[in-house]
Image (cartoon, rainbow, N blue to C red):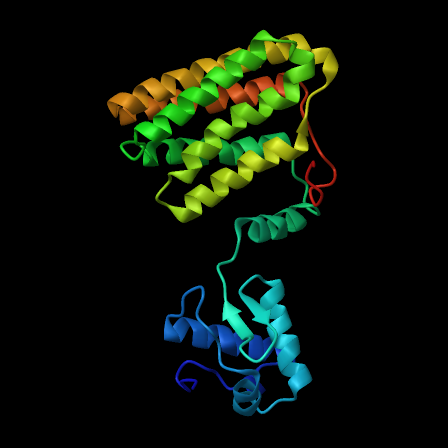
Length: 259
């Protein structure tokens, strides 16, 4: 069942027995090249291979389940099944880590000014007419929200502005780049707040965002990668400047996104 070449001697590890078994199962998954939807061996086979108690094995499987790697189904035809780790599970864990770090607006934009530019360039030539039309619809929605009561529509408008970047991330061919871009966008979406007294300046922020987004769509339509890079670079610089001028604040509780 398991290849001894891929599994280290569990007794040589000073870690908890169930954690060592979980690592052994991961090693086997990698060695066998398993994909989401593939089944792992039955509990009896795993117990026999690792020569452990059922309780220890179940603890190891529970650890893998908590990590989002497997789903354990009950019943005669059940058992552990490999699943794709969701974006939400990964981002939740990263936010839990950042909760106890000294994170601020400047930290977010230091990374965003790199990530968003790289992502924007990576999707040049990859946006079909449907995707470009979706970006246009997003622009129209932002313009419509801006023309109404800004105080009442501020949250909705912010959502639409950030959705533009989420659309770009969904077409990025680099999964690592797309994840970080989406994660940074969600940080801004869920954890940055602006004070009501800065509402007039926020309108200017939105107008600049719309201008940058419109220019980006135009550059994408003609496949001008250099223009995309230049526009997104200015966009991120302006976004950071506006956010700091508006005295945007980062929530103290990154573990609880806004509902």
